[in-house]
Length: 492
Image (cartoon, rainbow, N blue to C red; front, side, top):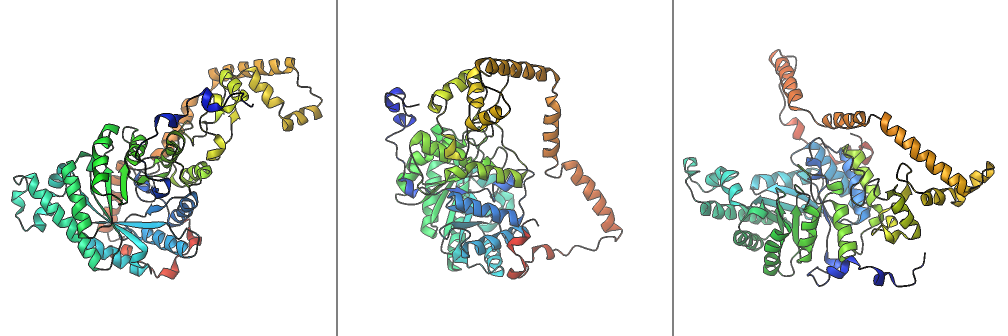
Protein backbone atom coordinates (compact mmCIF):
# COMPACT_ATOMS: atom_id res chain seq x y z
CA UNK A 1 0.00 0.00 0.00
CA UNK A 2 1.01 3.65 -0.29
CA UNK A 3 1.92 5.26 3.02
CA UNK A 4 0.63 8.77 3.72
CA UNK A 5 3.95 9.73 5.33
CA UNK A 6 7.47 9.16 3.96
CA UNK A 7 8.78 5.82 5.18
CA UNK A 8 11.90 7.42 6.69
CA UNK A 9 9.60 9.43 8.96
CA UNK A 10 7.81 6.31 10.16
CA UNK A 11 10.94 4.27 10.94
CA UNK A 12 14.66 4.86 11.41
CA UNK A 13 16.73 3.66 8.49
CA UNK A 14 19.64 1.47 9.77
CA UNK A 15 22.15 3.79 8.10
CA UNK A 16 21.05 6.59 10.46
CA UNK A 17 23.41 5.08 13.02
CA UNK A 18 26.24 4.03 10.72
CA UNK A 19 27.07 7.21 8.85
CA UNK A 20 30.30 9.12 9.19
CA UNK A 21 32.60 6.10 9.30
CA UNK A 22 35.83 5.76 7.32
CA UNK A 23 34.53 3.48 4.56
CA UNK A 24 36.47 3.54 1.31
CA UNK A 25 34.50 4.74 -1.72
CA UNK A 26 32.37 1.77 -2.93
CA UNK A 27 34.25 1.62 -6.22
CA UNK A 28 37.52 0.99 -4.31
CA UNK A 29 36.15 -2.00 -2.41
CA UNK A 30 37.28 -5.28 -3.95
CA UNK A 31 35.53 -8.51 -3.00
CA UNK A 32 38.16 -11.20 -2.54
CA UNK A 33 36.67 -14.69 -2.69
CA UNK A 34 38.47 -17.68 -1.19
CA UNK A 35 35.84 -20.38 -1.82
CA UNK A 36 38.06 -22.29 -4.25
CA UNK A 37 40.89 -22.53 -1.71
CA UNK A 38 39.86 -21.86 1.89
CA UNK A 39 36.28 -22.98 1.22
CA UNK A 40 37.54 -26.31 -0.08
CA UNK A 41 39.52 -26.77 3.14
CA UNK A 42 36.25 -27.36 5.01
CA UNK A 43 36.42 -31.03 6.08
CA UNK A 44 34.89 -33.30 3.43
CA UNK A 45 34.68 -30.68 0.68
CA UNK A 46 36.48 -31.33 -2.62
CA UNK A 47 35.67 -29.58 -5.89
CA UNK A 48 36.59 -31.10 -9.24
CA UNK A 49 38.48 -28.91 -11.74
CA UNK A 50 35.32 -28.56 -13.80
CA UNK A 51 33.33 -27.50 -10.74
CA UNK A 52 35.99 -24.93 -9.86
CA UNK A 53 35.74 -23.53 -13.36
CA UNK A 54 31.94 -23.29 -13.10
CA UNK A 55 32.26 -21.61 -9.71
CA UNK A 56 34.86 -19.18 -11.05
CA UNK A 57 32.47 -18.18 -13.83
CA UNK A 58 29.67 -17.68 -11.30
CA UNK A 59 31.93 -15.65 -9.00
CA UNK A 60 32.97 -13.50 -11.94
CA UNK A 61 29.36 -12.98 -12.96
CA UNK A 62 28.19 -11.99 -9.49
CA UNK A 63 30.95 -9.39 -9.23
CA UNK A 64 33.86 -10.81 -7.21
CA UNK A 65 37.14 -9.05 -7.97
CA UNK A 66 39.81 -11.47 -6.70
CA UNK A 67 39.81 -15.29 -6.61
CA UNK A 68 42.15 -17.34 -4.45
CA UNK A 69 43.07 -20.54 -6.32
CA UNK A 70 45.31 -22.08 -3.68
CA UNK A 71 48.49 -24.10 -4.28
CA UNK A 72 48.60 -25.26 -7.92
CA UNK A 73 51.91 -27.11 -7.51
CA UNK A 74 50.53 -29.23 -4.66
CA UNK A 75 47.84 -31.17 -6.56
CA UNK A 76 47.22 -32.15 -10.14
CA UNK A 77 43.52 -31.28 -9.90
CA UNK A 78 44.34 -27.74 -8.74
CA UNK A 79 46.64 -27.33 -11.74
CA UNK A 80 43.83 -28.40 -14.02
CA UNK A 81 41.44 -25.97 -12.34
CA UNK A 82 43.87 -23.06 -12.71
CA UNK A 83 44.43 -23.97 -16.35
CA UNK A 84 40.68 -23.93 -17.07
CA UNK A 85 40.10 -20.68 -15.21
CA UNK A 86 42.95 -18.84 -16.95
CA UNK A 87 41.72 -20.11 -20.32
CA UNK A 88 38.21 -18.98 -19.41
CA UNK A 89 39.44 -15.50 -18.61
CA UNK A 90 41.36 -15.31 -21.89
CA UNK A 91 38.26 -16.40 -23.80
CA UNK A 92 35.89 -13.96 -22.08
CA UNK A 93 33.97 -16.46 -19.94
CA UNK A 94 35.48 -14.83 -16.86
CA UNK A 95 35.80 -11.05 -16.63
CA UNK A 96 39.22 -9.81 -17.78
CA UNK A 97 39.56 -7.62 -14.68
CA UNK A 98 39.18 -10.55 -12.25
CA UNK A 99 42.46 -11.05 -10.39
CA UNK A 100 43.62 -14.66 -9.97
CA UNK A 101 45.83 -15.51 -7.02
CA UNK A 102 47.94 -18.52 -6.00
CA UNK A 103 49.69 -19.20 -2.70
CA UNK A 104 53.29 -19.98 -1.75
CA UNK A 105 55.14 -20.35 1.48
CA UNK A 106 58.06 -17.97 1.99
CA UNK A 107 60.63 -20.20 0.33
CA UNK A 108 62.39 -20.04 -3.06
CA UNK A 109 61.48 -23.72 -3.50
CA UNK A 110 57.74 -22.97 -3.32
CA UNK A 111 58.14 -20.00 -5.65
CA UNK A 112 60.15 -22.05 -8.16
CA UNK A 113 57.61 -24.88 -8.03
CA UNK A 114 54.75 -22.46 -8.61
CA UNK A 115 56.47 -20.72 -11.52
CA UNK A 116 57.35 -24.09 -13.05
CA UNK A 117 53.76 -25.27 -12.64
CA UNK A 118 52.36 -22.14 -14.29
CA UNK A 119 54.73 -22.49 -17.23
CA UNK A 120 53.79 -26.16 -17.64
CA UNK A 121 50.16 -25.18 -18.15
CA UNK A 122 50.95 -22.17 -20.35
CA UNK A 123 50.17 -19.49 -17.78
CA UNK A 124 52.26 -16.31 -17.74
CA UNK A 125 53.35 -15.48 -14.18
CA UNK A 126 52.19 -11.90 -14.73
CA UNK A 127 48.62 -13.14 -15.24
CA UNK A 128 48.69 -14.27 -11.60
CA UNK A 129 49.18 -12.70 -8.17
CA UNK A 130 51.49 -14.67 -5.84
CA UNK A 131 50.49 -14.69 -2.16
CA UNK A 132 53.74 -15.28 -0.27
CA UNK A 133 52.82 -15.87 3.35
CA UNK A 134 54.53 -16.53 6.64
CA UNK A 135 53.54 -16.39 10.31
CA UNK A 136 52.79 -13.32 12.39
CA UNK A 137 52.27 -14.16 16.06
CA UNK A 138 55.10 -15.05 18.40
CA UNK A 139 53.35 -18.36 19.14
CA UNK A 140 53.54 -19.34 15.47
CA UNK A 141 57.02 -17.87 14.95
CA UNK A 142 58.74 -19.80 17.71
CA UNK A 143 56.68 -22.97 18.01
CA UNK A 144 55.27 -23.57 14.52
CA UNK A 145 58.05 -22.43 12.17
CA UNK A 146 60.82 -21.88 14.70
CA UNK A 147 62.95 -24.85 13.62
CA UNK A 148 62.77 -23.71 10.00
CA UNK A 149 63.88 -20.22 10.98
CA UNK A 150 66.79 -21.60 13.04
CA UNK A 151 68.03 -23.63 10.05
CA UNK A 152 67.75 -20.63 7.72
CA UNK A 153 69.78 -18.53 10.15
CA UNK A 154 72.48 -21.19 10.40
CA UNK A 155 71.91 -21.86 14.09
CA UNK A 156 71.86 -25.22 15.88
CA UNK A 157 68.46 -26.83 16.48
CA UNK A 158 69.39 -27.41 20.12
CA UNK A 159 68.86 -23.65 20.63
CA UNK A 160 65.19 -23.82 19.59
CA UNK A 161 63.49 -23.33 22.96
CA UNK A 162 66.15 -21.09 24.46
CA UNK A 163 66.24 -18.36 21.84
CA UNK A 164 64.03 -15.31 22.59
CA UNK A 165 61.04 -14.38 20.42
CA UNK A 166 63.00 -11.38 19.13
CA UNK A 167 65.30 -13.78 17.29
CA UNK A 168 62.35 -15.44 15.57
CA UNK A 169 60.78 -12.12 14.66
CA UNK A 170 63.92 -10.94 12.90
CA UNK A 171 64.52 -14.30 11.24
CA UNK A 172 60.92 -14.33 10.02
CA UNK A 173 61.35 -10.92 8.37
CA UNK A 174 64.54 -12.14 6.70
CA UNK A 175 62.75 -15.24 5.38
CA UNK A 176 59.65 -13.46 4.08
CA UNK A 177 61.50 -10.53 2.54
CA UNK A 178 64.05 -12.83 0.98
CA UNK A 179 61.24 -14.81 -0.63
CA UNK A 180 59.55 -11.65 -1.92
CA UNK A 181 62.79 -10.35 -3.38
CA UNK A 182 63.47 -13.74 -4.96
CA UNK A 183 60.02 -13.79 -6.59
CA UNK A 184 60.58 -10.30 -7.98
CA UNK A 185 63.94 -11.40 -9.39
CA UNK A 186 62.13 -14.22 -11.20
CA UNK A 187 59.80 -11.69 -12.82
CA UNK A 188 56.76 -11.90 -10.52
CA UNK A 189 55.16 -8.44 -10.45
CA UNK A 190 52.13 -8.83 -8.16
CA UNK A 191 52.83 -10.14 -4.67
CA UNK A 192 50.41 -10.26 -1.77
CA UNK A 193 52.04 -11.02 1.59
CA UNK A 194 51.19 -11.37 5.25
CA UNK A 195 51.65 -13.33 8.46
CA UNK A 196 49.27 -15.98 9.78
CA UNK A 197 47.61 -15.41 13.17
CA UNK A 198 47.79 -11.64 12.80
CA UNK A 199 44.92 -11.04 15.22
CA UNK A 200 47.04 -12.48 18.06
CA UNK A 201 50.29 -10.85 16.98
CA UNK A 202 51.97 -7.74 18.33
CA UNK A 203 50.56 -4.72 16.50
CA UNK A 204 54.00 -3.09 16.38
CA UNK A 205 55.50 -6.23 14.86
CA UNK A 206 52.59 -6.47 12.42
CA UNK A 207 53.37 -2.96 11.20
CA UNK A 208 57.07 -3.82 11.00
CA UNK A 209 56.31 -6.94 8.96
CA UNK A 210 54.05 -5.04 6.56
CA UNK A 211 56.59 -2.26 6.06
CA UNK A 212 59.36 -4.77 5.41
CA UNK A 213 57.18 -6.64 2.93
CA UNK A 214 56.44 -3.51 0.93
CA UNK A 215 60.12 -2.48 1.01
CA UNK A 216 61.11 -5.91 -0.34
CA UNK A 217 58.77 -5.55 -3.31
CA UNK A 218 55.42 -6.80 -2.04
CA UNK A 219 52.41 -5.07 -3.56
CA UNK A 220 49.52 -5.82 -1.14
CA UNK A 221 49.44 -6.58 2.59
CA UNK A 222 46.96 -9.11 4.00
CA UNK A 223 45.92 -9.22 7.65
CA UNK A 224 44.35 -12.49 8.91
CA UNK A 225 42.33 -13.60 11.91
CA UNK A 226 43.46 -17.17 11.36
CA UNK A 227 41.78 -18.71 14.41
CA UNK A 228 38.59 -16.62 14.36
CA UNK A 229 39.05 -15.08 17.81
CA UNK A 230 38.86 -11.42 16.77
CA UNK A 231 36.31 -9.14 18.40
CA UNK A 232 35.00 -5.86 16.95
CA UNK A 233 37.06 -4.13 19.64
CA UNK A 234 40.15 -5.98 18.39
CA UNK A 235 39.38 -4.77 14.88
CA UNK A 236 39.15 -1.23 16.27
CA UNK A 237 42.60 -1.66 17.83
CA UNK A 238 44.46 -3.03 14.78
CA UNK A 239 42.81 -1.68 11.65
CA UNK A 240 42.99 2.14 12.10
CA UNK A 241 46.73 1.92 12.77
CA UNK A 242 47.35 -0.32 9.75
CA UNK A 243 45.32 1.93 7.44
CA UNK A 244 47.11 5.02 8.79
CA UNK A 245 50.54 3.48 8.18
CA UNK A 246 49.78 2.59 4.55
CA UNK A 247 47.59 5.32 3.04
CA UNK A 248 46.32 4.65 -0.45
CA UNK A 249 47.38 0.98 -0.45
CA UNK A 250 45.02 -1.90 -1.12
CA UNK A 251 44.75 -3.73 2.22
CA UNK A 252 43.23 -7.18 2.78
CA UNK A 253 41.40 -8.58 5.79
CA UNK A 254 40.82 -12.33 6.05
CA UNK A 255 38.68 -13.33 9.04
CA UNK A 256 37.43 -16.72 10.23
CA UNK A 257 34.07 -17.33 11.87
CA UNK A 258 34.72 -19.38 15.00
CA UNK A 259 32.49 -17.16 17.15
CA UNK A 260 30.08 -16.09 14.42
CA UNK A 261 31.78 -12.68 14.24
CA UNK A 262 33.54 -12.89 10.86
CA UNK A 263 30.87 -10.84 9.08
CA UNK A 264 30.67 -7.94 11.51
CA UNK A 265 34.45 -7.96 12.03
CA UNK A 266 34.95 -7.77 8.26
CA UNK A 267 32.45 -4.93 7.89
CA UNK A 268 34.06 -3.18 10.86
CA UNK A 269 37.48 -3.47 9.20
CA UNK A 270 36.09 -1.97 5.99
CA UNK A 271 34.57 0.85 8.07
CA UNK A 272 38.13 1.70 9.16
CA UNK A 273 39.37 1.91 5.55
CA UNK A 274 40.32 -1.68 4.68
CA UNK A 275 39.21 -2.03 1.06
CA UNK A 276 39.74 -5.73 0.24
CA UNK A 277 37.49 -7.95 2.38
CA UNK A 278 37.91 -11.71 2.00
CA UNK A 279 34.81 -13.95 1.91
CA UNK A 280 33.66 -17.41 0.92
CA UNK A 281 30.36 -18.46 -0.62
CA UNK A 282 28.01 -19.83 2.06
CA UNK A 283 30.76 -19.13 4.60
CA UNK A 284 32.64 -22.35 3.78
CA UNK A 285 36.10 -22.84 5.24
CA UNK A 286 38.15 -24.51 7.94
CA UNK A 287 36.41 -25.25 11.25
CA UNK A 288 33.41 -22.86 11.23
CA UNK A 289 34.37 -21.22 7.95
CA UNK A 290 35.14 -17.70 6.78
CA UNK A 291 33.21 -14.46 6.50
CA UNK A 292 30.15 -15.40 4.42
CA UNK A 293 29.99 -13.50 1.13
CA UNK A 294 26.22 -12.94 1.33
CA UNK A 295 26.38 -11.54 4.85
CA UNK A 296 29.26 -9.16 4.12
CA UNK A 297 27.90 -7.62 0.92
CA UNK A 298 24.33 -7.31 2.21
CA UNK A 299 25.37 -5.91 5.60
CA UNK A 300 27.41 -3.29 3.77
CA UNK A 301 24.49 -2.47 1.46
CA UNK A 302 21.47 -2.48 3.77
CA UNK A 303 22.88 -1.56 7.17
CA UNK A 304 25.76 0.73 6.14
CA UNK A 305 24.60 2.13 2.81
CA UNK A 306 27.65 0.83 0.90
CA UNK A 307 26.31 -0.31 -2.47
CA UNK A 308 28.99 -2.09 -4.49
CA UNK A 309 28.49 -0.72 -8.01
CA UNK A 310 29.20 -3.88 -10.00
CA UNK A 311 27.93 -6.55 -7.59
CA UNK A 312 24.85 -8.54 -8.68
CA UNK A 313 23.09 -9.17 -5.37
CA UNK A 314 20.18 -10.90 -7.08
CA UNK A 315 22.42 -13.88 -7.86
CA UNK A 316 23.31 -14.66 -4.25
CA UNK A 317 20.76 -17.46 -3.79
CA UNK A 318 21.60 -18.98 -7.17
CA UNK A 319 25.27 -19.03 -6.14
CA UNK A 320 24.33 -20.53 -2.78
CA UNK A 321 22.63 -23.46 -4.46
CA UNK A 322 25.55 -24.11 -6.82
CA UNK A 323 28.01 -24.31 -3.94
CA UNK A 324 25.64 -26.51 -1.94
CA UNK A 325 25.38 -28.91 -4.87
CA UNK A 326 29.14 -28.99 -5.48
CA UNK A 327 30.22 -29.16 -1.81
CA UNK A 328 27.54 -31.41 -0.33
CA UNK A 329 27.14 -28.89 2.51
CA UNK A 330 23.65 -27.32 2.64
CA UNK A 331 23.14 -24.04 4.45
CA UNK A 332 20.56 -23.79 7.20
CA UNK A 333 17.02 -22.96 6.11
CA UNK A 334 17.23 -19.89 8.35
CA UNK A 335 20.71 -18.79 7.23
CA UNK A 336 20.50 -14.99 7.00
CA UNK A 337 19.66 -13.59 3.56
CA UNK A 338 20.06 -16.76 1.47
CA UNK A 339 18.39 -19.46 3.59
CA UNK A 340 15.41 -21.19 2.00
CA UNK A 341 13.09 -20.13 4.81
CA UNK A 342 14.18 -16.52 5.26
CA UNK A 343 11.34 -15.09 3.15
CA UNK A 344 8.83 -17.80 4.07
CA UNK A 345 6.14 -16.89 6.62
CA UNK A 346 3.55 -18.79 8.64
CA UNK A 347 2.74 -16.63 11.68
CA UNK A 348 -0.64 -14.93 11.35
CA UNK A 349 0.66 -11.73 12.93
CA UNK A 350 3.56 -11.54 10.48
CA UNK A 351 1.58 -12.41 7.39
CA UNK A 352 -1.06 -9.84 8.25
CA UNK A 353 1.62 -7.17 8.51
CA UNK A 354 3.35 -8.25 5.29
CA UNK A 355 0.07 -8.10 3.40
CA UNK A 356 -0.24 -4.44 4.40
CA UNK A 357 3.34 -3.74 3.30
CA UNK A 358 6.50 -5.92 3.37
CA UNK A 359 8.41 -3.13 5.16
CA UNK A 360 6.39 -3.86 8.30
CA UNK A 361 8.28 -7.11 8.94
CA UNK A 362 11.15 -7.24 6.43
CA UNK A 363 14.19 -5.03 5.92
CA UNK A 364 15.66 -6.93 2.97
CA UNK A 365 13.58 -6.82 -0.23
CA UNK A 366 13.50 -10.49 -1.30
CA UNK A 367 13.86 -9.68 -5.01
CA UNK A 368 17.16 -7.94 -4.21
CA UNK A 369 18.74 -11.34 -3.48
CA UNK A 370 16.78 -13.35 -6.03
CA UNK A 371 14.01 -14.53 -3.69
CA UNK A 372 10.24 -14.19 -3.29
CA UNK A 373 7.95 -14.00 -0.29
CA UNK A 374 6.26 -17.35 0.28
CA UNK A 375 3.61 -18.48 2.75
CA UNK A 376 3.33 -21.86 4.38
CA UNK A 377 0.30 -22.84 6.38
CA UNK A 378 0.10 -24.49 9.76
CA UNK A 379 -0.92 -24.00 13.37
CA UNK A 380 0.18 -20.31 13.40
CA UNK A 381 -1.53 -19.25 10.17
CA UNK A 382 -4.13 -16.49 10.13
CA UNK A 383 -7.13 -15.84 7.93
CA UNK A 384 -5.47 -12.98 6.07
CA UNK A 385 -2.77 -15.19 4.59
CA UNK A 386 -5.29 -17.84 3.52
CA UNK A 387 -7.42 -15.13 1.92
CA UNK A 388 -4.41 -13.55 0.15
CA UNK A 389 -3.45 -16.84 -1.48
CA UNK A 390 -6.95 -17.92 -2.46
CA UNK A 391 -7.71 -14.50 -3.93
CA UNK A 392 -4.58 -14.40 -6.09
CA UNK A 393 -5.76 -14.20 -9.66
CA UNK A 394 -4.06 -17.38 -10.87
CA UNK A 395 -5.39 -19.48 -7.97
CA UNK A 396 -8.83 -17.85 -7.97
CA UNK A 397 -9.32 -18.60 -11.66
CA UNK A 398 -8.69 -22.27 -10.98
CA UNK A 399 -11.10 -22.34 -8.08
CA UNK A 400 -13.81 -20.65 -10.12
CA UNK A 401 -13.25 -23.20 -12.87
CA UNK A 402 -14.01 -25.86 -10.26
CA UNK A 403 -17.15 -24.00 -9.27
CA UNK A 404 -15.75 -22.83 -5.92
CA UNK A 405 -16.38 -19.29 -4.70
CA UNK A 406 -13.92 -17.66 -2.30
CA UNK A 407 -16.07 -16.65 0.66
CA UNK A 408 -15.41 -15.85 4.32
CA UNK A 409 -16.89 -19.22 5.22
CA UNK A 410 -14.48 -21.06 2.87
CA UNK A 411 -11.50 -19.12 4.20
CA UNK A 412 -12.36 -19.94 7.82
CA UNK A 413 -12.96 -23.61 7.01
CA UNK A 414 -9.65 -23.96 5.15
CA UNK A 415 -7.71 -22.21 7.94
CA UNK A 416 -9.29 -24.48 10.59
CA UNK A 417 -8.53 -27.61 8.56
CA UNK A 418 -4.90 -26.56 8.02
CA UNK A 419 -4.33 -25.92 11.73
CA UNK A 420 -5.84 -29.26 12.67
CA UNK A 421 -3.89 -31.19 10.03
CA UNK A 422 -0.57 -29.64 11.06
CA UNK A 423 -1.23 -30.38 14.73
CA UNK A 424 -1.90 -34.05 13.94
CA UNK A 425 1.30 -34.21 11.88
CA UNK A 426 3.28 -32.98 14.89
CA UNK A 427 2.27 -36.11 16.79
CA UNK A 428 3.09 -38.52 13.94
CA UNK A 429 6.24 -37.16 12.23
CA UNK A 430 9.59 -38.63 13.14
CA UNK A 431 11.96 -35.76 12.35
CA UNK A 432 14.86 -37.64 13.93
CA UNK A 433 15.12 -39.77 10.79
CA UNK A 434 15.69 -36.65 8.68
CA UNK A 435 18.41 -35.44 11.05
CA UNK A 436 20.07 -38.86 11.11
CA UNK A 437 20.09 -39.00 7.30
CA UNK A 438 21.77 -35.58 7.13
CA UNK A 439 24.57 -36.49 9.53
CA UNK A 440 25.03 -39.90 7.92
CA UNK A 441 25.63 -38.24 4.56
CA UNK A 442 27.83 -35.57 6.14
CA UNK A 443 30.05 -38.23 7.68
CA UNK A 444 30.48 -39.80 4.23
CA UNK A 445 31.87 -36.60 2.65
CA UNK A 446 35.37 -37.37 3.84
CA UNK A 447 37.31 -40.50 4.81
CA UNK A 448 37.11 -41.12 8.56
CA UNK A 449 40.09 -41.91 10.78
CA UNK A 450 38.93 -45.51 11.16
CA UNK A 451 38.47 -45.92 7.41
CA UNK A 452 41.93 -44.42 6.83
CA UNK A 453 43.51 -47.02 9.14
CA UNK A 454 41.59 -49.81 7.37
CA UNK A 455 42.84 -48.54 4.00
CA UNK A 456 46.41 -48.35 5.28
CA UNK A 457 46.19 -51.93 6.50
CA UNK A 458 44.83 -53.20 3.18
CA UNK A 459 47.24 -51.21 0.99
CA UNK A 460 50.18 -52.11 3.24
CA UNK A 461 49.51 -55.83 2.87
CA UNK A 462 49.16 -55.46 -0.91
CA UNK A 463 52.47 -53.58 -1.16
CA UNK A 464 54.17 -56.20 1.01
CA UNK A 465 52.80 -59.05 -1.09
CA UNK A 466 53.73 -57.34 -4.34
CA UNK A 467 50.11 -57.06 -5.51
CA UNK A 468 50.62 -53.31 -5.95
CA UNK A 469 53.70 -52.03 -7.78
CA UNK A 470 55.96 -49.54 -5.97
CA UNK A 471 54.60 -46.03 -6.14
CA UNK A 472 56.05 -43.66 -8.74
CA UNK A 473 56.26 -40.58 -6.57
CA UNK A 474 56.64 -38.24 -9.52
CA UNK A 475 53.63 -39.50 -11.46
CA UNK A 476 50.92 -37.76 -9.48
CA UNK A 477 52.74 -34.45 -9.69
CA UNK A 478 53.36 -34.35 -13.41
CA UNK A 479 51.01 -32.26 -15.49
CA UNK A 480 49.62 -33.29 -18.85
CA UNK A 481 50.03 -30.97 -21.82
CA UNK A 482 47.73 -27.95 -21.60
CA UNK A 483 45.59 -29.09 -24.51
CA UNK A 484 44.72 -32.44 -22.92
CA UNK A 485 42.31 -31.01 -20.35
CA UNK A 486 39.12 -29.26 -21.40
CA UNK A 487 36.14 -27.60 -19.78
CA UNK A 488 33.96 -30.52 -20.86
CA UNK A 489 35.70 -32.72 -18.29
CA UNK A 490 34.03 -30.86 -15.44
CA UNK A 491 32.87 -33.98 -13.69
CA UNK A 492 36.34 -35.46 -13.36
